Image (tube, rainbow, N blue to C red; front, side, top):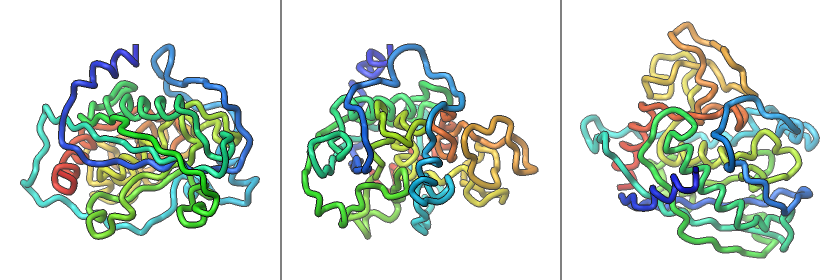
Length: 294
């Protein structure tokens, strides 16, 4: 059902920005067999089962989950001037995606991710941004443009492609013109759908790419600014004092109306807990895209 759904989306056209995903190398053992998390019944949000990334961090001397999702890049996101490039109800944009696989050898454990993982990653992006799991259809569609594979262990020091203790990171659209070398999305390859890399049991549905692409399109974390009035600059995401971990249903850390948005792709919950962007987030992404990338 989902793949036929995506095929219908192939006719979508729109402004073409470029999303680059580096599938990074994580030194661990893995199985090359494909276990598609996208096949079968529609996704049901619930806490995942299995070895957590947090356990992996502890084993490697890492820090807490807030450090594990992504590093603090100390970025300041520029706002779109009022009244300019407003989004529309029928907004559609197709973003070409280039996957650059940096590997140290030919084994999956050396970063040589299978094509099936890449295909499922693109599908996970499309389903999550189309509101398939719940929430708003953002109007964004991602299309695999090309995949290249580079075997060069020396490049790891330059690109930090093993991800270290992080699942991924990305840069806001307002800064890429002055620093084009940082434009893109970086993910740990263990977070891709189909991955059986130890330590990623709760983070292998492909939603790290969804989360980081949200930053690439101009979204803050849902807990941006804590309980302050502006928060993440989106009116329909309830205020949240800090990141949620696991799947803390009913968590409510601010006095303002609404429980914490733990199911939102821009929180820090486990992958199986995620299922939505809000209409306000969709509008923000559209406006950021049109103004900074259009």
